[in-house]
Length: 368
Image 1: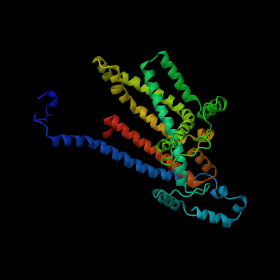
Image 2: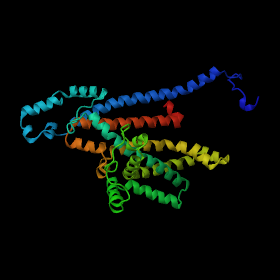
Image 3: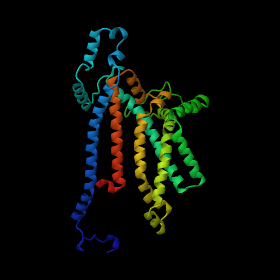
Image 4: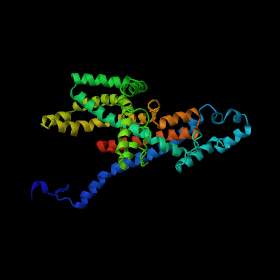
């Protein structure tokens, strides 16, 4: 029998049975399963806490929702004000209001928006996918360019390309996003006319059939490639504007992480063995350097999702940022709580994904 086909040995020198191999693999999976269950339970408890925090903070906002939503004549009639507060459940004690709110959230009911007079869940289903598409495209661009730039800067340390990339990343971190959005809109749309204007698709085009709410994906699924091209063209400029800060951040973090790993003993040993540079980079260096990069990318995606208000306003992007702004200015409490809960849950999901990726990349995290 050849050495490659020899059966594995147990501790007593005998051949290991298939049942023993299966038990070994099952035992190796148990830490990861326990690790995953702990993270999911923690995320659920934090989601419950988010509902309480958003409810408390929303009700601490100064101002009277009745005065913000009723006209001048109606607000002077106590009977109309009392009826409006009763219709919206604002006449009940705060603990009872929270329990009603929590029960509705658990059943997918976020209440009725006072500005659109529609269920908040319907409003969120319309506006959240637009922001997800914008933030998703921005973080994808950031990951590809930021990690690539960081690796190149680390491998060419103190050379011209390294200095150029470091200056570029510093520029991306320093420039205010809203100013960059105004400049990009003015230069590329108004002056050069090489990018489309505001909105998600060209005027006169019909939105693709709703599947995910993401126009690019829905258009591709339905085979409407003209709509796909229009949606992608409208997406690229605001996504690049949002991505510039994250590209600079990921470039600097990736460079630092790669430089730290390059100085480790096992990387020197791999070089001494004569392993190809490509194998060392992808199998040893990047795998260890990705842990802090994943952390930054996860936090950056959450920030992009919650910080798109000004960019959405400049590019007339109908996303959750505009909806949150209008809800806050009109003291639309159900809508504000719905937006806060959605953003908080997105953060939790991102952190859960990051934790799982930690366990996949670095098995030592599973036992923590």
